[in-house]
Image (cartoon, rainbow, N blue to C red; front, side):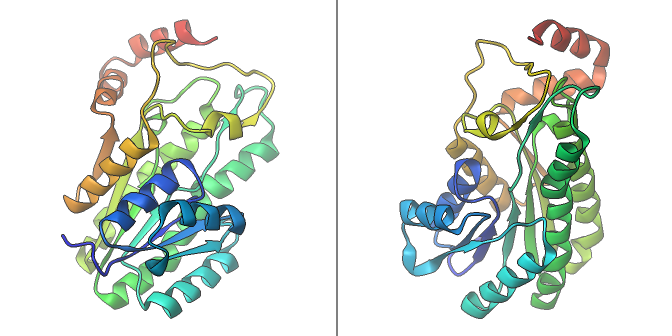
Length: 260
């Protein structure tokens, strides 16, 4: 599948995984629109990526449907079409279920889940009219394995996984491909930017350094080119996912021992 001439829109593209995805698609010849709540940060990422003649940076808070409408209109005006929409915007909440602030939980769902769903509903008619397209949801291994003290964040990703996979079946007849990407631990500023509650514990082996955002981006590109339904990266994360599916008690015991 050729990327030259394709138009790709990436939410949450001012840093981390979003910026890396924007860069890898731009390097393959796509025109890329970088979206971020902060337009100056999106523009800075665009400059770091290069290819300024076929990229654009726009402000967009996907919690608000009118902002999605605005960037869709601007993208279509400038590039005439949208071939790939990538839902990457999101943030975390570190706290226990018993102590977490419900307003923070609602806010996270508005971005991580409802914002992504709204974007899908807005872009699907455009792709149907074009005769096809691809929607990529950047989820998490936490959408397969619920993480203690990150339960609400895991819930947003479980929901995104379910909705994306259902939409994949619904939209196949329209030539719209839906892919879910589930990274494991990634070396980004995600934890630093997460909302921090009362019980700040983590479940992560000390020996696990995590993978780079660039590796997630490359896996996303490969998955898109191969039209995969789901990408789990790195491949070693298939082990805890399968372990939790087959032996949930053992997985919960292990996570309980790592929580600190």
